[in-house]
Every structure is written in structure tokens, then in C-alpha cells.
Image 1 (cartoon, rainbow, N blue to C red):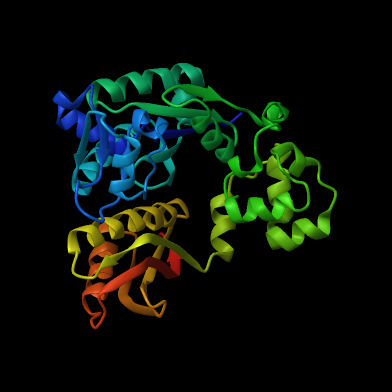
Image 2: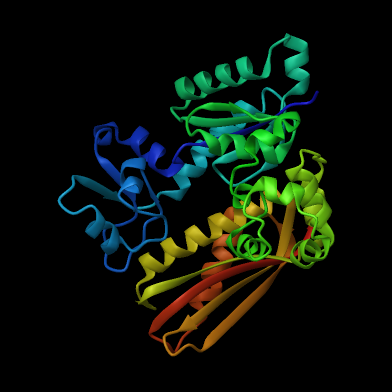
Length: 348
């Protein structure tokens, strides 16, 4: 049997800030500048337990953490990228990184290493977890499976631990919400709910083929097969064949002023991090980068640029987005910001 490992850094932004600032060890930490109209980029688990979430306005986070001892720090994305590269350089010693899921998640195919060194998957994961903690300082959630999507599912089951989930035991996770499956988001889950598909088990046993086709299109049988434990591990390529764009947008509870450049920069970085993660997960590059801005009067403006060569470089996408934004004038308040990547090609 082949094994796939999914490595997920535990609260990476927060973890890196704590490595750089050990004096913050016992403080509640939120990554997000303590500025008017700023938003939360990341929060530690204590803050999350009080209801703080990424994308939440800082003022709302303060309300939830009233009278608590909280540290607010600006986003230092270049530092997080440094630690991501360190992690990648360490993992690649043991095999091939099958898919790059942004700066804090990696899939690893280490089958040759396991066979050569006669080591069991769990023992290997335990060793890697200790090595990364000692060398880099990051904590890892690690999922192990013979299927990629189950490896990612497993890493989310028990944060900061090692979890194994295998397709032959797929029924053990049938009770989980169908939204826990890779590629099923809230909107798709809402559609599935209308046909009484609430859990992974419901999807595995659903006989309403017509409705599944309406929801998933040509991929309906692939999604059902995954729920049944019949995984084809080239699903990244399958996803690529139909993908036309990758986008992410954020609507604001309170309008943001156009000239509040620090806040807008932080929001764009969060949005770019999301689309960048999915771009690399698909093993593709984009050539066209677009931004969408909705004014407070609900009029919408979209601007795009096409690069000379396709890219999957974070910095180039970031500078392109900022360049597009800086070209826009004649408005004061912003209700929504969005980013779209398109015009894809293979990562060759």
C-alpha cells in the first residue's frame, strides 16, 4: 500500500510570531494590526475559543476578548514564507512533495523512504514531527492515509497530533459532516442538504444520481467514490481539467476607506494567501490576475492584467494586485474586495 502524509502547521502565523517573540508565550495572540478597520489574519486557539475568527474586524475581536491580556501584532508575511521554505526544505529530504497547499500545508509521498528504511508510517510521522519542532519550532498536525483527501481529512481531526485514516475503514468517518470532505464547501453542502445528504455516509449511499449530477456535474461519481473509500490519487489533475478560475472575496461589515492603505494591504494579503494556496494545490500557474472592488454605493469595478509568462509566485501575484488597485481612483469607501486568478497552464 502507498501512503500519503498531509502536514498542516498549527496556527502558523501565530506560531512564527511566538518563535520570534518568546515573551508572548503565555499571552493571547492575534495576528492583525491594532488599527481602525483592521482585520484578524490569524488567532491562537484561546482567542478562537472566545469566537475570534480570521477576517473578523479587530474591534469585534476586542469586544469578544474584553479585559483579557491580548497581544495584537501586524502581519509579517515575509517571515511566514521564510519558515514555510524551511519546512519544505526539511520535508523534501524524505520524498516528493506531491502538492503544495499554500505556505502552511504540504502533501508528502515518502513511500521510497519508508521502504528503504523499513519504517512504519506512524513512526515516520512521529519522527518528522519531533524534528520539525526541534529544528524549526513549528508544531504539526499530521494526517496519514492511502488517499490524499483522507490524509488531509485526518490532519484536521486532531490538531497538533498524528492521525491515520485509511480507505478500508472509511465507514468510521461516515458520521462526519459532508462539508469535511475536500472540495465540498458551504454552498455545495447547502445544496446537498436539500437532498438529505448531510454526512459523508449519506453521500456514499445516495442513490439520487440525477441530483448528484446537478450538484457536482461530471464529477459526481468521483465524489461519491471518495465517500465510499474508492480514491483515485490523481485527483489534483482531475480537478485541473475543469478549473477555469480561482477567486476569493471579502465583504466588510463596515466600509473601508480607499486611503487606508495598511488595512487594504493586509486584506489583500489574506485574499492572496487563499487563492495562492489553491493555485499551488492544483499544480498550475496563472497568467491573468484580476481584482474586484465594490463601492459603498454597490457599484462594482473589475480590473485585470495578463502577465507575459504564467506564474505561481506569491510576490508577483501580490505586486500585480497592488498595481491594479493603485490604478483605481475616484471613490472613497469600499464595501468588498476580491481577487481572481485565471488563464491557467500546467506547472511545467
